[in-house]
Length: 439
Image 1 (cartoon, one colour):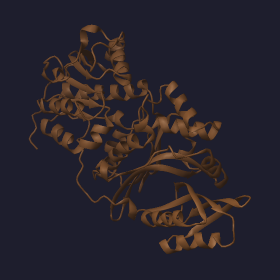
Image 2: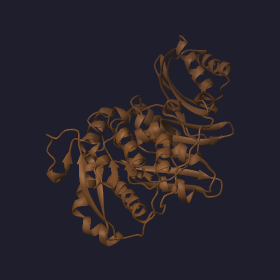
Image 3: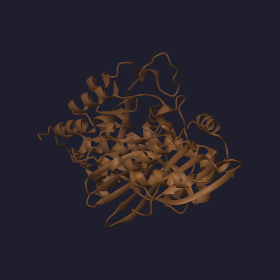
């Protein structure tokens, strides 16, 4: 592609004007650090980073930490202002974030974003625009909060065949799940505490539904395998149906429950998905508690790698954004490429129904002769084999805890659909996938 890059002699004394779109939790933290720690950043990096404009949606909102002369409600002024050399987008959502990011790239301005929804939805378009303009588009903070994972995948592991990526990539849900498991609190109480601590938004839907993690899973799959997975091709489930009974059953079976983003290379293409997963208690991700994020990578040569760190809150995310700002500023000043261009292509995305999975199923049943044979028959007809069964009696009722052998996801779903139609099954109380040791 044609590049409009202009090479120049690196001048560390040159001031780089920064325009920031968004002044929420992350944006506010970033502005404060750029203003208050400007001399510290200069001393460490040789870069003089000056905030020139901060675009917000609502001018009437009080923002005492941001100098009033910097604030505007005209987000596109970041593109048109000649004193803004580098644009940071931390406002979130698809619009107007998408418009300002694309226009900035087309104007030849480097862009740093923490917007996982935007990158997941329009990544290939934005990567192409950055390559055409010859400027960087950096998004380290879009996945994993303060964990460095984008650079390891695109640079350090660029020559590695990554086979699988498992990620606890949402600090809110991990805090809720570990609070429910460790402290025995209910879902609503754990959520309220996460909101009180600032880990969860007032509207936590994107977190607890799995939508936030799904956007991150799409990005991880694209970077790990070079095949872009559109969000609508990615299966996503949240945590709202998990109960105390599931945590107790998991403990009995030697598992812990986490919400996982899973991306893997398969012979027939790439698979990406998000759902609760029962992990063996000795799995590295089983020890990740609270709002911590962690990403576990399996590669053909490197074996297993674990990246972990704070995954929620403004300060950790602002740290990752600031690191990108410094890299983008260096590239802008020197004219040399700091971060390699992101290359992703369309490819085969495997339908989730074809992926082999293993299931834990909790059933409430009538305790009478022949019940187990009917349940076994339902699984057998779907082509699913049962690995283990535990029964807890309750008079003329019983609870069954089943773990299946691996089978195609569609077959597991068909078996459960049949169970729901049986007269002896009062309810399929819970289904959670299990990290299989059989695959």
